[in-house]
Length: 381
Image 1 (cartoon, rainbow, N blue to C red):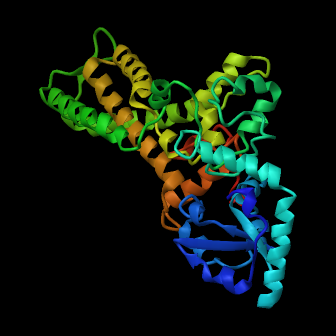
Image 2 (image 1 turned 180 degrees about the vertical axis):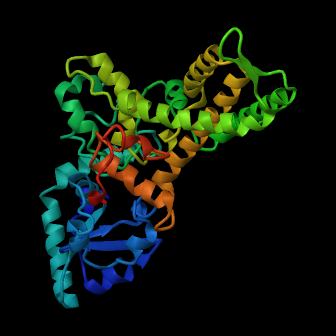
Image 3 (image 1 turned 135 degrees about the vertical axis):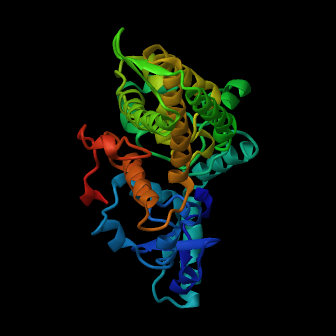
């Protein structure tokens, strides 16, 4: 919402009227927030917010059982729409609104400038969808960000972990920009046919009875076709470890403050996702980029194991990757049933984004966080 609409005043009856999925308002003290756009994103599910629509969330924000992080509070401010007038009559409310209009005049210059930017970018990739202060932010959101973030130096780490609800423009070149965006459905469309074909190929190859695993030059034993599900699940389990390692050691490396290029690489790989965690076009890997990782995984396994065994393990890992990308998308935009496995994963992952960026690296499972001591403590939920 543009600053030109502030401040507005609402009665308790007006706030209570907005309690549907199409219009959901909540209170924090006397401040009113329109959280309609946040319903699908909330880690606790849409129903949890709707059940508290029109009510004061101060107790829920402070906890227990869950005390919201400073980032969560900062995020909420993006949905601020006005203030509550408790118990005033219609005439007094009207007086308060007139005062609000008078106060708006003191912010006229800044408001006009912001409105001008929004109008100019209404149909452009730079269109605003949240309240980013264009004058005070460390980067210029009206320009591509890829070549700016490296100049933040020691300020980069704090800046990138203060999320905003708006899309990011990485490159000025439209072809380069398009190459960084992928709709979620392209992941199964591209990779599942390969998974199905390789499953059939491996099973039929093992069924011939000619595949053997050689332990020494004198000792080997045959691999039966019914071993394929075991090999497949071994590959899937191996992928969960690779997923953890990539997320922790590559995506969450802390680039040196003086190294412009490493900061830029980090932002392109994962930093942009933490800055704008609900940018739906960048929640899954573009198939072109993913093919590099997939190819390395394939060659490593085929060099380590006999071809059919290597491919059998590989296809399990590839299927694990597809499930990983789909789960990651769902954790950001889905509304899992309370008490379900995905509900716990969603809460865990949102905690990683908003409060515990240096822990909670598991996406499809939290298993590897425990032996490596990076699990988010249970009391933080």
